[in-house]
Image 1: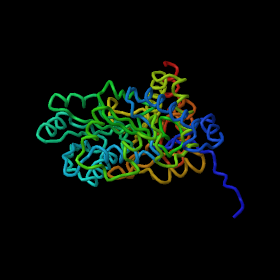
Image 2: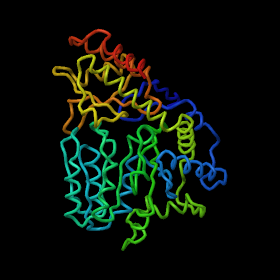
Image 3: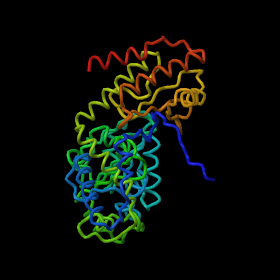
Image 4: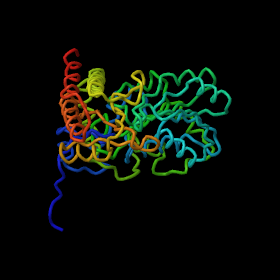
Length: 390
């Protein structure tokens, strides 16, 4: 087969990936270097410094793992969990559930603190479960991608009033779009991905580990059963030792470096404000059309917005219409929310006024064509009013 592949230029408003700035794609056209080239080591050092800034941490062990966000999740759990160790896992969505399942695979006795998907966790229940257990590890998904729920990672550090907790946070859909505050919030290990708020293509998982986390890893009775994701071995490659570990995806790391540089040029607070304003305008437009959000305002993500599907609407037909006629990709619900919500990602380069207005116009047209009485033009008008006010 000799023909080249020419995919369409989509507007990516699903749960990830998000669209990528041209500068990031251009960075991937730079000459390929070997993974032990001293010039490539300079790129790695820059990535580490930029990631520390975006994670808001001084952690020395901060770098990208070759793999998607799931690899970052597995790296944190595999390195910190020992066989038959109790681990408290907060679950109010699909990815909290995945953390629990992975923790069990790595030998943990998982103590789940659960809430209905799309509902906030009971933090007193988290505290009580931790207090009654022998656990040191507590995990929480900051941005629950399956529901649009933002969980209160800032409250986890109070668990240290009980004992010396090691706190693991999933920042896959928050890093680069929301404040994560690793040091400020006392988080010990966290992982994310390259393709959402950061704005690079998928394929890398930024991670960071505190000294408390590293002390726990070093004191293990046995080494972790994973070799590829062993943090102490990876650290020897990313640190000044430069001990060979694997053939790193150089072009992906070029892209990550460029995306992180763009974040710092925009400024973290300015970037967070952009995501907050974009989400606020989106919600105003959706509600102006007579639709409802799944998550209460005080718990909503800015990066992932879950819209309740109105009764009688054909979920798949609406999404297919948006894709084929308007070139817009959005996400469906799954698990307990299958057929009940649309998940609209507004993160990284995709978080813009133009995308919000275009999506609202396209959704209004789509629903009207399917026989729904939607106030004409009200959605985009309501969103514009938010942008005018700032």
